[in-house]
Amino acid sequence: MQALQPKNKCITLEQYESLPEDRRAEVFDGVVYDMSSPSQEHQTISMELSTILNTYMKSKKAPCRVFHAPFDVKLFDSPLTIVQPDILIVCDKDKLDGKRCNGAPDFIIEIVSPGNPADDYIRKLYYYKNAGVREYWIVDPRRKTVTVNYFEKNLLSIQYSFDSTIKVNIYDDLLISFPAIAEML
Image (cartoon, rainbow, N blue to C red; front, side, top):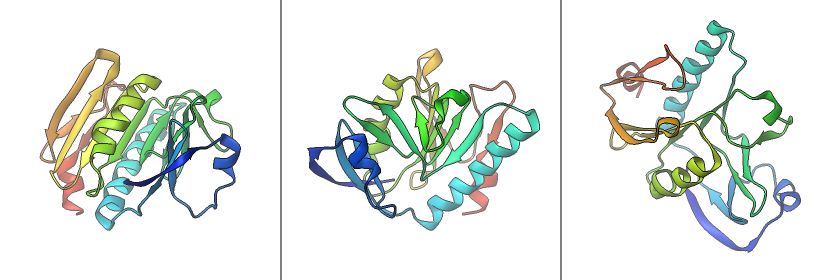
């Protein structure tokens, strides 16, 4: 998702919660950034990945929950940092309060928007690593690549093509076939 325009004033959690429901925005260090709507390709990839992950969780009877955007993740209280990852997995139910995830999810996937890829490759990589996300994937439909960042083992930026089947590192037996997803595009 693309961050378009920063607003200069720092925002509080209460102010963020009072934003109109149809406003798509994230907050980094107290600054609000508006987001553009995702493309059809973006939505297709997101739906396919969400389905694979959710099916896996159900088959394993895992305590983890899969969420997709828009779903708030409050990474930090001060300065306020709230993101809306495209897909996330939360295994600690105490982080869920009925409105959002408070703290780092276990796994995040961001699907790169063409207008501002630096958001996913640089800004969110920095915030997710520092917040304690265990694994972060960057799916880039334009480049047809998936960059896997497995923070638990300090493995950064292992890049795969859409021709690959990729292991989700935080699970022993979860593989995602990107050729099957690419067929849907």
